[in-house]
Length: 252
Ligand code: ADP
Ligand code: MG
Ligand code: MG
Image (cartoon, rainbow, N blue to C red):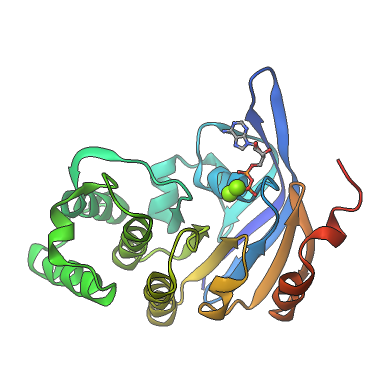
């Protein structure tokens, strides 16, 4: 049983002139097996939350805590966070020139586990995971994210997740740019990892569509750098009908 605890998290980002406060006291607790949907308007700070927990250097934590089973995540390097069981699928995955998917996955697995995977089982695992995600075997020999379509990028993220077996995954707009077929394959992948490993999921999304395929246990409305309201799956239905307007009346 793993618990990711985010307490009163405050984060600034380096803007052109001065640091800008983006996260203004985020509280959130995610346990193994739970799926938390984080929903909110564009610019509310959802990606900032993901990057800050992952340790992206552009984001400065100015207050609060992030604990994984009581361990101070913010004191860990990026690699150590992955080794501790955190996984981040980014909204804008970067290209890794000259590195094939196959080599990338093996390097990542070795880094996370602290030892190289046994070759024979590894090849079988990769093949199986790729088949599950309906990916052609030739995909493994392509360079990471180079010329990937939106759907290929997302499948590649879920492929990493299946193979790295994290404890907690943060999926940032995994649904964006996917047609319904790709969305189903990607969602099945997330659900499969949840079922087989008890993964806890922070599912960041602007739209309710993906929640038809990945059932959230909790829904959090994220507005202006903090959680404005939390509830069950029915909260997503209300957002679908009403949008975020009621949370924005204070104006900016
Ligand atoms: P969301 O994911 O909810 O759309 P973001 O976390 O991407 O929101 O952005 C929140 C706010 O922080 C926005 O106003 C955005 O312009 C700003 N911001 C985020 N990242 C950066 C960055 N690297 N440099 C400058 N501003 C940023
Ligand atoms: Mg955005
Ligand atoms: Mg975002």
